[in-house]
Structure formats: C-alpha cells, structure tokens
Amino acid sequence: MREMTTFAKRHGWVGLAVLFALLTARRVLSAMGETTPIGVDQLLRAIPDVATFAQLGESVLRGDLTAAYSSPFNQAGPLQIVLDAVLRLLVSPLPATAAIAVLCVVVALVPLLVSGYAARRLAESTSPGDQWMWLAAWVAVLVLGLVGADEENVLSGHWWQIPVLVLWAGAAHATVLRRPVLAGALVGVATGLEPWGILGLLVLALCDGLRTALNVAATAVIVASALWIPFVLGGSFQMAAYRWNVRADSIWSLIVGGESPFPWGLRVLQAMLIAVIGVLCVFIFIRPLRMAGQPQWLTACLLFPVVIVLLRVASDIWFGSYYLMSPAVLLVPTAVVWLLARRPAGIWFGLSSWVVLVAASGIQPFALSAVAFAAAVVGLRALKKFPAEEAPT
Image (cartoon, rainbow, N blue to C red; front, side, top):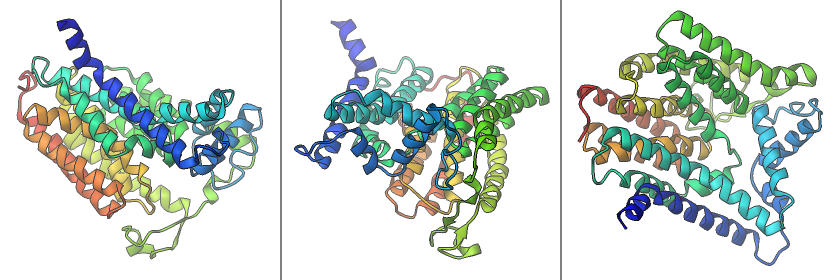
C-alpha cells in the first residue's frame, strides 16, 4: 500500500495532465459540432497558421522545396512546417473524430507534461526529503490546466514554441556539463523550428572559455544552416519581404508610429537589442549560478529561455497569447517549487508567473512582460543568498 501511495504521489500528476488534455479535446470537438461530419483537415483550417504550415510541410516531404518560402507569410522554420505535416499525416488514417481527438490530446499534453516534469525534477533537487515537495508537479499541472495553457497550445497553431524553450534550457545545461557540441546542436534545432531560435546563442555567455564558445557557435551554425540553406538556395525565398504592423501599445509605436509597417530590418535591430540586454542578464544573474547538480543551476537553466522570451515580448511589435504561455510553462513550476521550499526567490518567481499569465490574456502584454522579466531576474538574484552546499528546507 505504501508503494502504491508513493507511486501515486510521484506520478499521479501525469494522470491529471491527461485528464485536462482529454477535456480540451472534448471542448474542441463540441465547438466544431458533434453531428457535423468533421475531420482533421477541418480542425487545421479552424486554427490560425497551422493549416498553411502543414500544407507547405507536405510539399517539402514530397521533395518540392520551391513553394515553402515563396510567400512571405511563412515565418516558421523548415523543421516546424515538416513536423506539422508529419503530425497531420500520422492522424489522418484515423476516423475523423478520433483523428481530431488524438491530435488535440497530443498537443494539449505538451505544456502540462513539460511543466510537471520540470517541477518534479527541480523539486527532487531542491528538497528531496520534504514531505510536501511531491505536490510541486501536481500544482504546476493544475495551475496551467486551470488557466487553459493546454487549450491555448492547441488553438494557437504554433505548436513548437514550447519545444524551442526546452531546447534552449537543454543547451544551457549542456554548457555546464562541458558538452559544447550538444549545446550548439540544440540551438541549431531550435533555429530550425523558429527563426528566433537563434537567440539561444546567448548560451555563449555561459561557456567557460573561448574555445568552448566557438564550438557551441560553430555547431549551431552548421545545424541551422543544414536546415535552412536548402530552402534559401532551392527556391524563391521571400521570408524577408514580410511586413508586420506595429501595435499601438508597443514601445516601437513611439519610434515608428502605431500601425506602421515593421520590416525584417527592424526585426534584426530588435534581435540585437535583445542580445545586448540578454548577455548582460546572463552574466549578472544566470552565470553566477553555474553549479552542476545544484537546484540554483537547474532553476537558472529553466529561466534562461524565460528571460530571453520575456525580453523578446517586451520589445515586440505584435502579440499572440501563445507568446507568453510558452514561458509560463517553465516559470510556473519554478515558482511552485521555490514557494514550497519557502525561499524568498519563490515570491519573485510567483509574482513573475502571475504577471505573465495576466499579460497572456492580452492585458498590456508588452509592459507586463517587462515587469515579469524584472521580477524573474530579482528572483534569480535571490537564489545567490544561500550557499551552494546548503540544501533548501
């Protein structure tokens, strides 16, 4: 009986995640009409962007690289459009309703499982003997399920945002393990999923030497180039022709005016701004926590991508709620663990999580992302207050 109770405490959160995912699938099916003949293609057409991505990915799988980036609309990475197509092809042979249900459950599970696993790993490292720390994964999954992170992940159509952040966190951890090739490869794959995945090169600020940093950078460039160059050279590559419209509440509206076109050239300027501030933050708040196996470092790895994304959103010109739901998946479990550990850092991480979830609803997303960023880095600073060898209680 004790073994069963221990197993339920340790792994029961997975069942909770599955329950939330099933409820999301049921809501999606109900919204599409229980009596109307439906199929996975109808679901994809109802979700912004992903239908286009899947169609372009299928053309790539057929060996046609020319159409993938012939329209500026496609701002996704080549790996993303191919994976969207693979998901569609995998579920298409199923009966229509089953295909939609399976696809919804799989996509909905991503934020819940990532958050729960992050909470469990961090809890085991932080306070392995604490009788209440098993609650961390349960609470993280419960919070994200109640705020609808699983449903948002399905309906956003941008299903690979969270994997990009996970790859960045893995790259950060690989630097302290002195595995530069792995770190660079993870950043390269992230860039293949999303163009802004290249911001993961901020892990260079975590490297312990110039040679290591060069190995990371070289590997990232090789992997990213292998994914992108066939499309650049193999057809009409029009990605850089896209123009965004600047939202009135973006900081850029003070410079170029609200509703003004925002070309790729300014996107590069934005990336440079993020890189400069990001490097300073990594050096000041994250690099000092480089202690392999310590909870401070695991926390820093989880928040490394969060800090970058919050900087990106705060300096952006457009907003979608999925922009902030992805960092929430890593930020919420961090807050839960450090609150259960009764550490001041938990208060700051909790504040940052709350602000992110409010901003994800569309309330002042740019300004609140800056506030959440500030709270997160203050929390990282607070982690330096206790010695590495002192296990939190």
